[in-house]
Image (cartoon, rainbow, N blue to C red; front, side, top):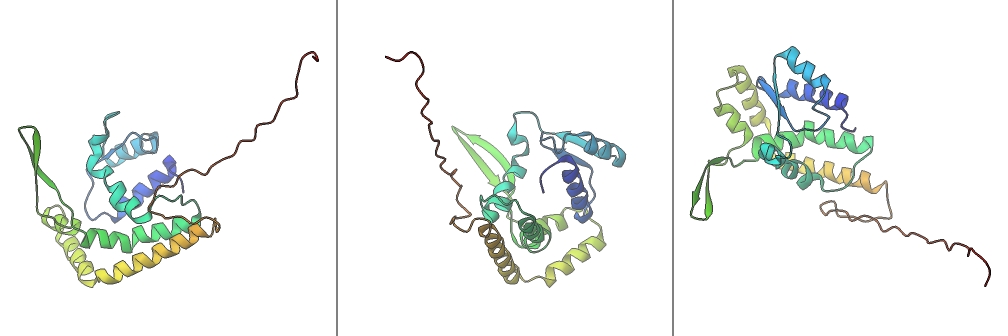
Length: 210
């Protein structure tokens, strides 16, 4: 809950445990949840290269930033989830069904080259592949990890994963609706702020009577 440097650091270590390949470094944005002494000392101790994007150059991490749509907003919408019940449901999805569905069954396009032709930019893309396929072809994981990933892949049913994701999302929206039963919202539309009425208090007249 929240994005303090302690919570972000704990989450980062949990992510590292689950990643099937070794880390050589961390490249973060410029938020204080990453640019702090805790993470700096951790990288020095673990011999990880620690770099950050340039200030006011948001396209330095463009490939990562676009996942804010595909992995967050497209799934959870724009509602404000701020209870531990909602947090538990979201973490359950990211740790289980959603992680498996995205990594094993959702292909991703990767830019191969760009060429300017006249006034237009012509882009060429590699064939779409899932993160699972790219990882197996990378040559950066051990054979036992490959066998483990293959076993996980063969045990999965994408239709069942999708049904479980939808069921958990329904549960999440029910938890949100329970906080404000009088308000009907569409989770995939940006919320407009509620109107607030300011009551002007008429000040008593001052000065000499006329």
